[in-house]
Length: 279
Ligand code: SAH
Image (cartoon, rainbow, N blue to C red; front, top):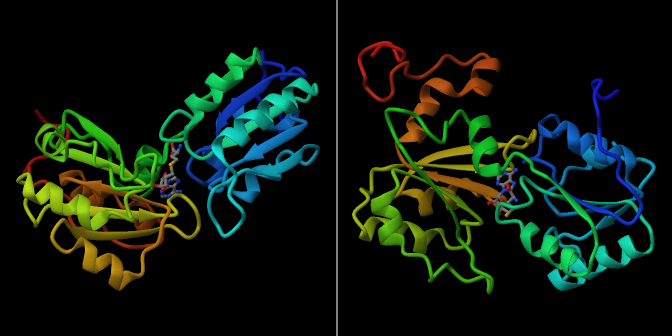
């Protein structure tokens, strides 16, 4: 598959390109990512990067640097220093991360280490799971009738604990739609905090697991019933959790269900009573 005509940057020996691979579906890669895959000598990739994407760099050595999936986990500092070593050895290095490298992906830390070691870098953004993964579930992260802001939060802090440092009460009051990464482990704590801060138990929640892949599953639930429903469904990470009325839009926008032949459940889930584009 040739790249469209144009000026595509050259991945030079000794450089590291930090690149987002998108949430899963290889079609969600950027053209810059494809250009990078074509040129790399080494691809260092994370757990959430799909095999099919690596297949586009058959000439490159593939090094797994993930932190999940039963394989031995690599320490963050070791990964960053490995990138430095490979660059210094004159390799064309592609650091491939799930979603967007600068969204809860430690891409900022890796890039900083590289610059501190005088290794030249390029950053290639990717589609983050909290936006693209929800779009594949038919959930728009903003909608004029629902929210004027959206908050992206992580359910883990650096120690892997529930994010004690987050002010859940402020988030709950300040943001109609909350998108949670890495939230499954502490979902009971998070939902309890949100309800304590005044969000109703009936508020819609969607859990989108392995979003944009062929295994994508969407669990529609509520703040009050979410913990029990996750257990009953056996839903497992990686998952994006979306809290807010935006989830109701799935009733009309579940485009994957519609491709599979389902009818929209409700053409007007927000109860506007008029065509969406009037007013
Ligand atoms: N940089 C990534 C996020 C890395 S943190 C991005 O921008 O998307 C890892 C978390 O991202 C997972 O625990 C999960 O919450 C979310 N995630 C990444 N890929 C996902 C996918 N395909 N489906 C659901 N959640 C995903």
